[in-house]
Image (cartoon, rainbow, N blue to C red; front, top):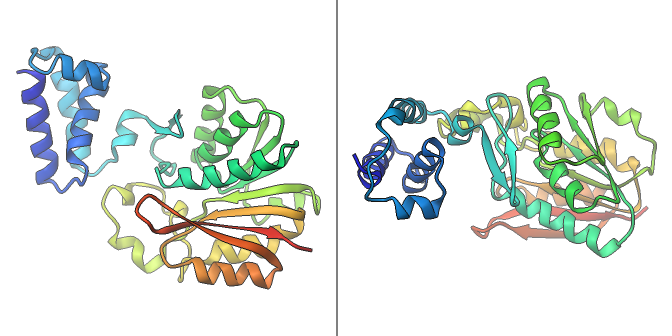
Length: 284
């Protein structure tokens, strides 16, 4: 069997099982098992595969066909040009979340001074670790409730060699008391924002991810209300807050922010044109 034949067979299997990105995932699986990059796969397209690795390949393919996310199978995901370890028990960083990182990066770049930044609901640490690696003169904190996710967070700090971040295991609504008022310059968060009733209808791959990282309550807005109410006092005047948000949630969250005297509220769209991030400045 050639790599071309394996690719076509894998692509067809994934497509028939309603995997949306079947072409991409077919090549990803082959590259992962056979230790190839995209260029090498093209070069060796008509070469015979190593038959000794077909058992491992088929095992991974079957896991994918049974609904396990590709990132869990490979054990990592690429995010903002870096690698992050993921697995069962932690939310998989999405491409759209890079918009949130860009927004905070642009804000910190304009300030050009040492800042204190906290990432609430940190998960794998993709947001805070990425920012900490860019702004090594600033201090970062990441708060995560799940012990499993927190384990990945710590591994990713080591993997990406950042030493200006403090991981905090705990409930974001309890550890808030550990931070002094007006001690933070930036709050960033990608909290759970899916409505509870919608969760059973999600793709089977998404349902493999931890529910606690998805469930935002009856209207999907529970975390935004609580974060804005509890954490705003921890921001200095002129402090910056940025959230990833769900589709059509922007006006409600804008209202929460306005009620807490935030100004210069802005929306940012993802690569599909959907408003995905909201930011604001504390004005009191």
